[in-house]
Image (tube, rainbow, N blue to C red; front, side, top):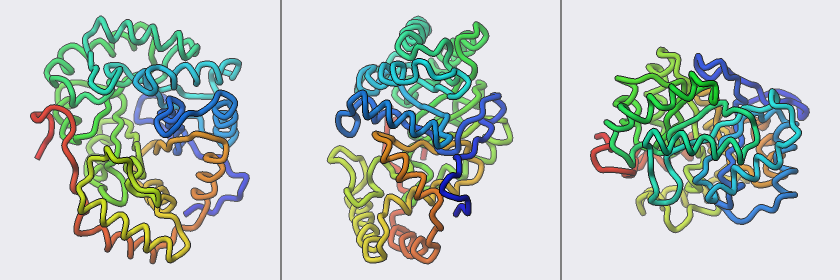
Length: 320
């Protein structure tokens, strides 16, 4: 997969035409908000330092993660780090499980609050968080224009939208302009439909960020959390795939991560980091040769359930 030595630094790529250069492996900071268990400040600080040392310059967070804990932790741990050493992405619009507000006034207030927590002077990439839970008409008419005003004011350098149903991107971007999109669980061993969207996004100069290459834990030996929306059949297929990998001496999550990193046209793949050991493990997987024979066997196991998305957000925002 990658023939670089153990001292290799993760390469950076252009995020579309935004002017931002982001590491091809990004630091997913939902973990610092306790998404998978509490992380103390010392552990978080070591993880961030290890990520920076490895060339992981792209940090993605949100006020939603840990009810601002992730942003506060990043702000504290990056305090004193030269601002040009990292690219900070955060979000607006989602603040709790069912708390969504994409009005212009709330977006403005949210940005000011995030800037205080992050202590970073400006936000490099500001994204609307999970837009499928809101009226797309209001996203188009009110939220995206407010992002553009904040960009013109210099508080943010680039703007984007995020969400799960891929149909939302075509609908919103048909009539608005943003610099980047963040899609999750759609370039994985279980679902690679994001690949169909990359060409037209690239043609328009829109940067593509791939989140959750392990499909929120579905593609791991530990399995997904109880709330995971995957169907029982897909869950069972992933269990079978994990057993196949274990017999080959490989963890399914490692194979899934390697597969996601091969995605063409994607600027950065986000991976959740909780500790410096996570950074070291991901660097080792990145540099490890991909077992193409095992990959083919796992894909065969998953094939009957491949590209079967679940519903997310308002019913009308889920495409066919």
